[in-house]
Image (cartoon, rainbow, N blue to C red; front, side):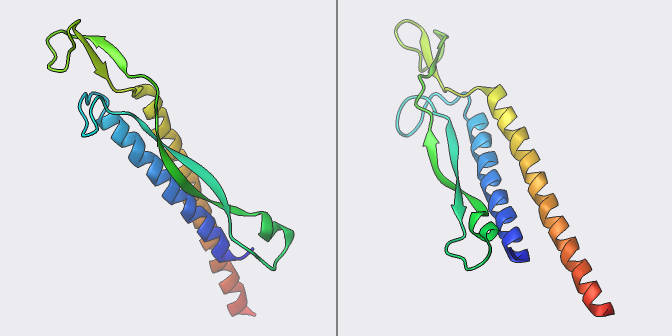
Length: 143
């Protein structure tokens, strides 16, 4: 496995976690949006991560098994919207019920914190790889 594979793996994870943060932020921003262009309340979205091989390699067994991550697709949560009694709301039905987005603020905050930790871990992996490469260069210069 080369130094560049390590960087590619970590950078793919950074991109995936960025997508996760973007979607969690959008979910939080729309937690009270009762109208969308499609009609009805906002529906939360989640990324689907998938491990992806680097393709055919001629290296070791490790090279063939190491995988990077990508966002395979973004899925819309199809769970039912919450119903809230608020007869004064412009979107209330005849019984005073308003359909609210299926966004759980606590869950989205946990998603943000988890994505932040994963992002930090991958940045640390890039930093360690960079330091190892710099040390290898220094060793080569002193020989």
